Amino acid sequence: MKSGFVTLVGRPNVGKSTLLNQILGQKVTIVSDKPQTTRTQVRGVLTRPDAQVVFVDTPGIHKPRTLLGERLNETATASVGDVDVVCLVLDATAPVGRGDQWVAERVPSDAIVVVNKTDLAAPNQVLDQLRAASERLAGGDEYFPVSARTGEGVSELVEALVARLPEGPSYYPDDMVTDVPEAFWVAELVREQLLAVLRDEVPHSVATRVTEWDWPRVRCEILVERDSQKGIVIGRKGSVLKAVGIAVRSQLPPGAYLELFVKVDKDWQRRPKALERLGY
Image 1: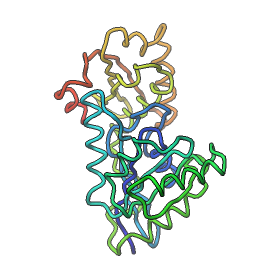
Image 2: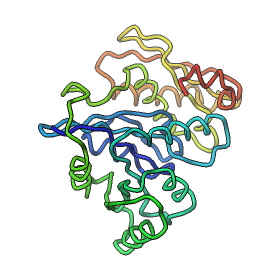
Image 3: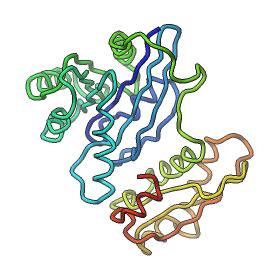
């Protein structure tokens, strides 16, 4: 039996969360096309007869503009230490840039480089990206082109990860796929649906948290930073909240009753106490 921990790191929107969901065969972390969708470490567990791999999904490492951004970077970089394997995830459709180099300088030299989104890139573009990664990035021992969306190349990546793990015990029960608490997961589903419809700076200003849990009744609070954003999140005659509620309930067990409330918490991204209350 092999077991161990694997961290996925990279810039925002390279597809780390989609990759984790593909590896596990089910959704354990939310995804969107907005930067900083992932705001905390999310653990996903792959258990099979010969191995247990505990994956750690992390926020995208970026140039922070708020205290929240600084906290997200700290969360991501802290996850690189004390794990068995680090995967540096790159986007096959975007040139290797200074942001990728900055992340690569913070991972071990034996990190596995994963070039994701091969389904969106031409074959020569993927080859160029693999070449650029090997020439320009400090970290990188093995290189894997994959498509987290279609699953192409993912099984080969998983086999390489298992091969690197030491012998050891199971850390989680065989039927456990994530350690994310139910209340946190519901709040994340609400935020995912909001990310899908909100534009400009509003998605970054939204935070969600479950304030009451009396199953099947769940109350989720949506925080925004300004009064003007509150109206956008509610929508005309409550249209946005209604659509979000319907979409989230479709992903919950039958009978769930979800209450959504919007509250203004001025500049919460920049206030330490507000971030601590939200778990950032």
